[in-house]
Amino acid sequence: MKVYLYSGMQKMIEKSGVGRAIYHQQFAAKQNKIGLAKGLEDAEIVHINTVFPKSLWLAMKAKKKGIPVIYHAHSTREDFRNSYIGSNLFAPIFGKWIKHCYNTGTMIVTPTEYSKRLLLSYGINKQIEAVSNGVDLVFYDKKNIDPMSFRKKYGYSAEQKVIMSVGLTIDRKGVSDFVELARRMPEYQFIWFGESNLNTVPMKTRRAVRTKLPNLRFAGYAKPRALRDAYGSCDLFLFPSKEETEGIVVLEALAMKIPVLLRKIPVYDDWLQENRDVYKADNIDDFESKTKKIVEQECMDLTEAGYQVVEERSIEKVGMRLGDIYKNCLENI
Image (cartoon, rainbow, N blue to C red; front, top):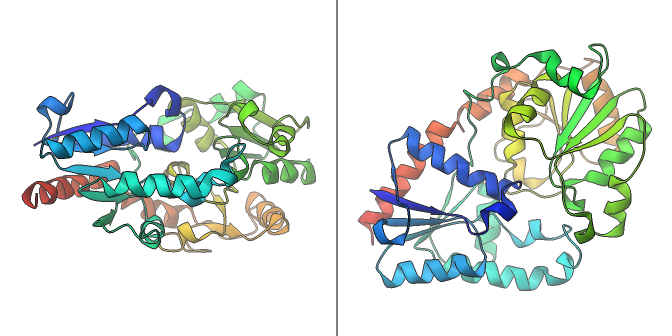
């Protein structure tokens, strides 16, 4: 069995969750001895990760050749909203476009049961399987880091409390709330990894990212090793995102056994239990209150329970699941 993993315009999207997901799939395939094709010519299955026009063209070409297509539904109408200038206006059109793309697949894979429910609500009539993006538990392990290297790099002392987040600097990721929390809690250090072209985001988001506070830093894009050092050295992973299909960075933080505080949104309902695996907040005041309690260790440590959740979402287990889906797809052409 040879699978062609396709992600159009990878250089443009590689800093996003969608861009990173294909690397997870490549690693999962390697771990499970699934052959990877270099193109359509030697592929038995095509696994498409993006919704660009060339991706749709490839899906249609594969189907004409009788090659089954797995369409990976990373994007939804809901997570397109509140992202870039005009995204809310064009969200209905985007919804129709992705429905058309996904319906070209022989079957669809999506990261969570929540995103599966969204796709079904669009009227998509294909078989849909929920499969986590997965996390490399060997790489994301506190044993692999020097706890002080991150703090030395950014000028934090061992005593300072550091709160981190990761994501594109767009409204949907909650960047404005992160800045407001830094303003409210000057006794803590706040650092955000990830970036977007500020010319593409609304003025409110631009102003937030350009905010100057002595305890706030926008560190830009960080490569996996640098990000791993940050996870392992910070006191809290605060992820105020308003909409996700899963959240690869949440998996990474849980794997590094760092306390996690999330916004209370539906995507986590099926797999991350509040006050057992992670903490969740409803609004900015709730975020502030819970941040203080977590950082000052005034509430229960949930990191071991959180780690048990990601153990079920290891790259190896994801690869096994994808392998079964590939086989099923071939057997039912």
